[in-house]
Length: 289
Image (cartoon, rainbow, N blue to C red; front, top):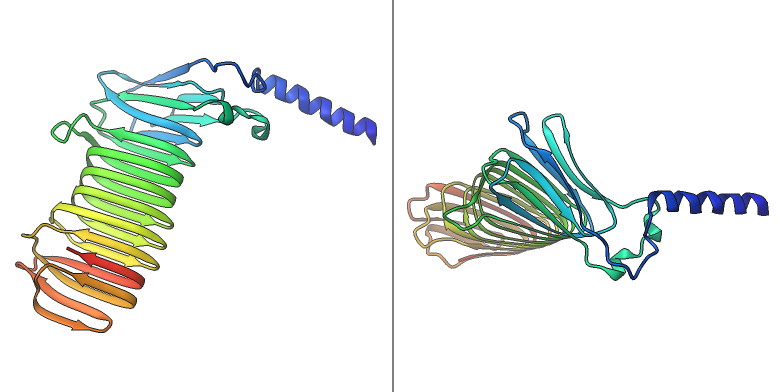
């Protein structure tokens, strides 16, 4: 039995040495690693899959996708069919990697500023910052799909035809987003959206969601299982409100005509009533102002 244990430990040690040349060198500075993939007309998706990394996505004048990373994990940028994949994966036996305690791992991803197709970002944990240069010079994408396990994401200055977001547990801040379809699914966490233009389809299982709408151009549909939702609408918004509450309340500070308020519901029209706002609350509060 002792021989078997010794043999297993020896194999384990050799495996770690082979896969991680320096994970136990805790006091050394990790070198920068970079890799890239050429952007071609066949690429329809940039797929980013990261965890435990502070990431910045930077659009600039270039013809490839390049990533620069200062950690010891495995950085991979590759073309796979119609997709360029960017990922950071831990080497070997991750429970022996103590590098998170001795360094702040940073990843910079450079993408072509004239890339206007699709992106997917899968954030296990960590932080992501992704923004256009300004509101007048935004990022333009056909589709942006975000899947956040546990982490923080900051998005700014974007025009996206189809925006979809799923937050399991994390915090998301979005500033200046214009979209044709907007889907927001928050299981547990917080979502703050400012200077937003577009429809809203939101499901909140447990968390806090706040939207500040610059211009109401489409319908809003919000379902809350347990949580709080704030809707900051422009004073000239044209909508018809239909809200139902099981446990909680819906409050509207904007003046409503044809208003009908009951213990568990609220209905009314603001302006011309052009766009429908449907609110369904199981347990929580919705505040419209």
